[in-house]
Length: 174
Picture 1 (cartoon, rainbow, N blue to C red):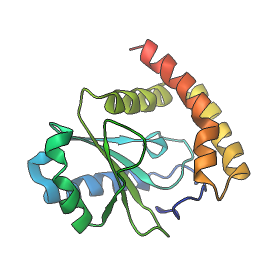
Picture 2 (cartoon, rainbow, N blue to C red):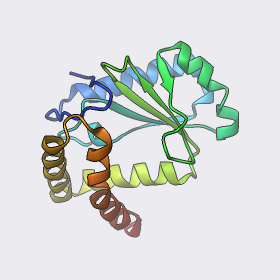
Picture 3 (cartoon, helix red, strand yellow):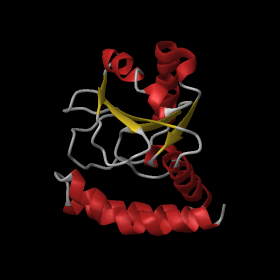
């Protein structure tokens, strides 16, 4: 299963289908944006085998520059993505796919040397390499999902300290 109503929190057990959904979306994006999207990464919890996650596929697409990528907004909107300019991350363009009642994908466009790219990859790779940290993260997410099922902002805010701690550790190990 893939998809979740905007603003809600519901975790699903890890599903191998998430990787296939990621790969299918990459192929679709390649056909839509051609060579303007230079590379792709599957990020977020759905990219960590065995980890429960909100069933929304997170993709990171590398662009040459955010200024040049701005004209992709119209193209992506024509192919089912909603541009979300006020997402609070300075070095990316952020999009959500699917109706608000069933978000299926999140797409971040960023430059390879950006903090957004570096942090997303470092966090994902650290969880993949450290099963005990991934298990701790899952336990924290489950606790918070139970506490905030209809308040994604509160859920996200409550896990920020954990994420920042793990990210700092991951970046220190680079």
